[in-house]
Length: 203
Image (tube, rainbow, N blue to C red; front, top):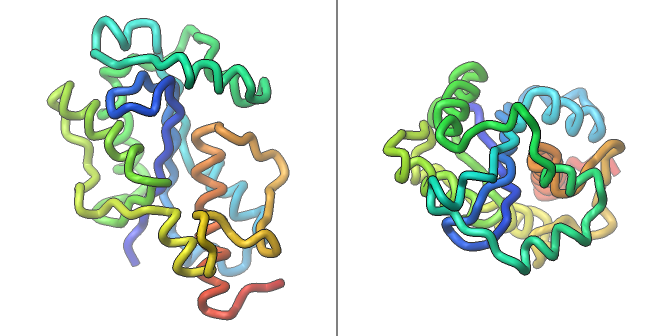
């Protein structure tokens, strides 16, 4: 069984060349979920994943990324646990380092040619735009990208890209709009949706 991948970005715009705050990614092998609780699945995806917090101060001038006022205003309405990503840290990664960091994580975690799931296609656009600008390949084939919303809708009968309310599970410790936590939550939502489709959900 191939290992699949979930990626997510937090940004300062919704445009294709948005300034990027952070990236979360986690490699998934659902065969390992058989004896785990929903909370355990979420915790495992967080512990197995990686979160890259990115340096923003030079992205506009050095890399041609943009910042949108409406997105900045939106961040001001979020909880401190999520908006902490806006605060610069001494170890923030320069955008130029991101492709190599992604490739190293993929290699270390056994991802080769599996599917890469994103919530909509804009996250793949952001990653590919960085790779093109820097002329550095990212080892995710463009034809392997899939949409999380469509997966959940088809498997669960939902129409909004999220599980029906009666099947939603909110893990303890979840920080909404933390890129890695959002990845882990989407893994869990897809797992529950697939279980609903196969009529083996433990509710």
